[in-house]
Image 1 (cartoon, rainbow, N blue to C red):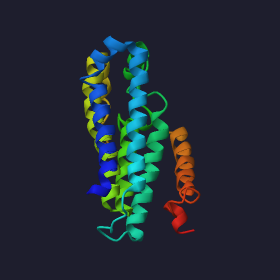
Image 2: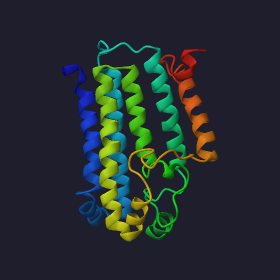
Image 3: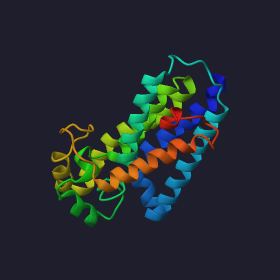
Image 4: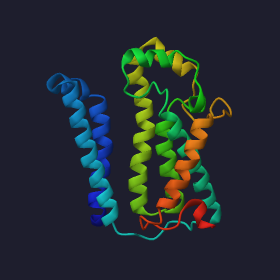
Length: 226
């Protein structure tokens, strides 16, 4: 595993620092550094550990795949990425889980959920998790397991921890939001994500697949069959 040391260190650092600085270390760090100082430190640590993880992934040996990635898995991966893209775009508007001022967050949380929030209350986190799963399906190697596994753990465990944190900050407003939304996508049945999320998600989905070629990653998504 020596060849994966940098990747493992980056993955552990990226996930661990997010959990630590978002929960047990947040209050003491804010008290010492102030809110702006804490935010700056959070960004710097996040970028540093993410850079280490990505560089580790680039340098890690490309091992043998654990299973063949045929058209069926590529098709499933492509569909998952479409859902992830729609959830991500939709999460950028009207999301009470984002770090917005408390009063604004309360207003959002007491409204009836709309768009992608009728699918899941954590659309951004689930978009990251689905990204990880879709890439593991078509690149089932140790380096992919480490990189994408870190993103999946951060997204899903982070979502659960975020529910607790938002309840402490927002109280009944968040409980109201939880009672009207689902943690698991489509847990309350099928829901239309909204026109903006759908159109923006499709554009992002196509652009991201196309970008694999100039980035030297290889053919991906629908471009695999074009």
